[in-house]
Image 1 (cartoon, rainbow, N blue to C red):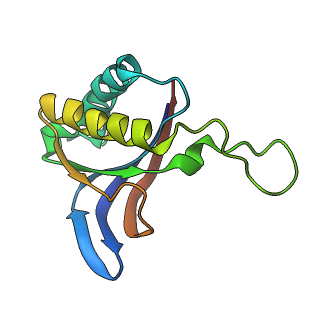
Image 2: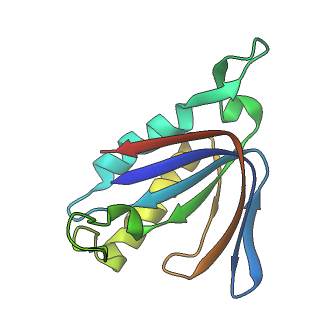
Length: 145
């Protein structure tokens, strides 16, 4: 399981030209499920991401969490995070979980984040999404579990 967490000022996600989700301050979380991943990994990851302290406090230190600054998450499924780039020039995706199971874990992960008190907005699993993102920092962190 992999998650790329980017601190953002604004993220807007569209499908077929129609706005689906958008957030102001918060995280864009790109989420990929590997074969064999289960709810235990999603539980751990939700706990970590929801408590991540990367927003600046009054002293300019990255010390505040998403909830403390009133931020939200835009959760974006992205199987390409599981790409194997070790051979040739075309990525292989044999390590990515099959779509039905991956979608279940994507939705489960989002619900777990919500259980930690985080507002979560969603992309469209498996869709050709267009994402406009205004990063803050930039701050990009990668979880691989």
